[in-house]
Image (cartoon, rainbow, N blue to C red; front, side):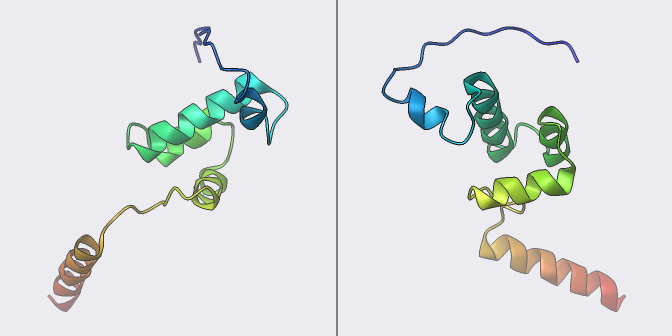
Amino acid sequence: MEKEKVTIDIPSEILPLVAKRRKDVPSRVFELLILELYRLGEISSGKAAQLLDMERFEFVRFASRLGIPFIDMDKEEILEDYKQAHKAAVK
């Protein structure tokens, strides 16, 4: 995979927060970027997992632990999907 180098300025007061779970700040920033792209629906869970060198299921669990749901549907969408599935099963 081709990569590009990006330089960003991070305020020194938040640097310890970025490096909280990982000592490698660039890796942590990359991880946060991938999580946000996934949360926004810009990339799939499979692509996010690939970019973070994880299995897809491992990524889904990782994102879920951070409050990013695998299925982001409201109550009405879930109910509509259920109705459609039930309708298809009855045929």
